[in-house]
Length: 182
Image (cartoon, rainbow, N blue to C red):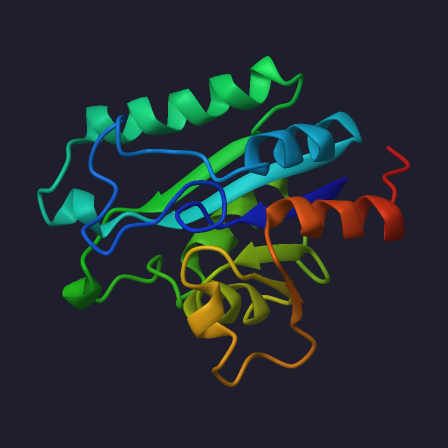
């Protein structure tokens, strides 16, 4: 199985410092839906690991979050692809949980779900905490310049981080260098 783990806000859809709180505010970044569909159609398994502290802060409901995720799933399906798994952390930063990135709980949940090691599994994020969470369990870090990525690029990144303009560019690279023989 060829697995990839994607962050959501700033990688797949537009991010907001005021939080993405409604379906209307969930706006896909140009090319991201098609990129996910292309990976899926090439045989990759696509998982999403996302911090959603707006839920714990009371900015939106579980129903609203599910509606945003269902919309993303439907958009990818319309392009012939599939989002195989979504895991999210609903906790606020001070909750002390093990699932809020940069902790690796979401990644461990994904590994357990698919019953596999995450060694060398690509993970794509726009923030340092996205990359740190993946690297802690053996993932290969990919930074995108969308979302908070341009600011993150100025920080000390995990060793071996590859940097791309957006998710579509990451997918182009992966499909060229690691075609799935699934």
